[in-house]
Length: 110
Length: 114
Image 1 (tube, helix red, strand yellow):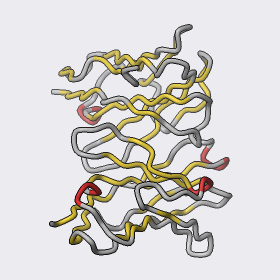
Image 2 (spheres, chains in turn blue, purple; image 1 turned 90 degrees about the horizontal axis):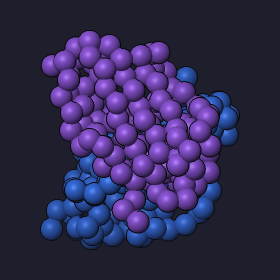
Image 3 (cartoon, chains in turn brown, red; image 1 turned 135 degrees about the vertical axis):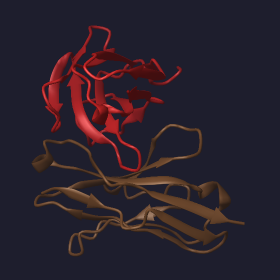
Image 4 (cartoon, one colour; image 1 turned 180 degrees about the vertical axis):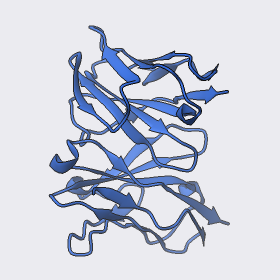
């Protein structure tokens, strides 16, 4: 079955510390992976997608097919990074639906 | 552009009733998707419409239906409401069809079933 797992419901780190938000997936085909973010009192929005291979707001994510993971990383956390982060997957086997993880709430402590 | 707009913002219904939720996509976007988000969980895909046709359906009962109009706005209808239908219903638009397209979300409609 297709599944996205975000093992941490809550992650709290200090400003300036590295951040890693974990995302593991279960999918038989070739997935496309995404990170969406929701800042306080804002709408859910796309942060980055693995095929773009971009760094957005200092965040990067690498698709590791061997470990079926797509962890989101940032070397130095900033207070404005505090938000809810969702990992999502799309692919042919899922009829191109987005399958979402439960989300991780990231809190950056000053 | 105001982005994706959804109405109403909040709605309270009782079991057995039906409800219609509305969504207007970003100007120029032809695809609309609907999601259900229960508290503490990620969004769950319900439907995707593109050019007024259903292009994808999630694992939801037939009580859920939707349509897209010529101006690309969309309605989600839910019949015979159950307590478990209480959730935030999100609409997202994209320029092209497919969940791999960047989805632009509205603020959602909070539906409470009593």
